[in-house]
Image (cartoon, rainbow, N blue to C red):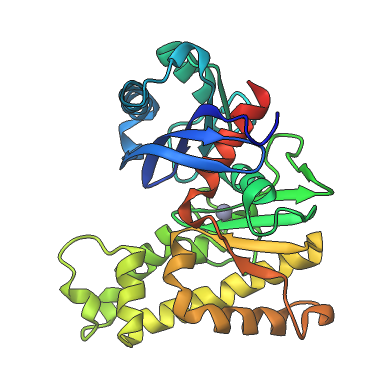
Length: 322
Ligand SMILES: [Zn+2]
C-alpha cells in the first residue's frame, strides 16, 4: 500500500466511562478521524445494552459518511483484560459483569462489518508506533491512566500479547503490598491507588474527615477531575491525594522502566492530562526511584495523539487484519 492509498475504516474505543465510535481514513503513515460519536458507557447496564447502543451509533455514523458496513473493517479497542481478536472480557474491573462476553462476534453479527478487538493499551502503542512522535522506535510502552490503568507493550517492533492476551495489565503491578485494591481485589496495585476511579473514591471517603475541603461543594459523586481542580486551588485534601498519586505512579513507572528498558514510555489518559501541573514532579520522583541509569534523563513522554491513541490504533489494527 502506498501512502497515497487511503482506506476508510471504522473504529471504536470502549472505556469504563465513555465509548467512542468513529470513521477514519487510514494510510501507511497517516490516520485521520473523519467523524466520531461519543456516549456514556454506563457499564452497570450490562454488555448487551452498551453494545447495542454502540452498534446503532456505528450504523448512524457509517450512514452519515456513506460507508458500506459490509465491506468496511471495524477495529475495537477496549479496557481489559480482554482477549485479542475476539475481544472476550476476562473479569474487567471497570466493566463488571461483562465477563465472558465477546465484542467482535456480537458487533459483526449486529452490523455486518468484519471486526477485530484488542486491549486499548495495545492499540494505543500500535498507534504510537505507526504515526506518533516515537514511530521510528522499536521498544515502546504506552501507559494509559484513566478510569483504569493499562499498558500496551511493544518490544523489538512486535506487540507483546501474553499467554492469555493479558500482557500489559500494568495497573495491577503491586506498588504497596496490602494497600487499597482495584475492583478486582488485588491489594496495593497501581490501579487501586492511582486510577481515575481510585482518586474519586478515595476523595469521597476522606471527605467526611475534611470539613473545610472545597470538594464539599460538589453536590454529586466526586470525580477525579474534581480532585485535580481542587488540588490546583491548593485544597489540602485534594493536594494530599494527588501527591500520593504522583508518588505511586512514579513507583509504577520506575518498575516498567526496569522491566522493559523502553526507548519511549508514553503516558496518556485523562488522569495524565489532569496531572499536567505535576509533570515535572512526577518525572523527578521517578528519577529518584528508578535505576541509576535514569538519574539524569528519562525516556518518559506525554502522548502526541491526545485521547485518540486507542481509537487510531484500533483502526490501524483493523486495516492490517481485515
Ligand atoms: Zn488491581
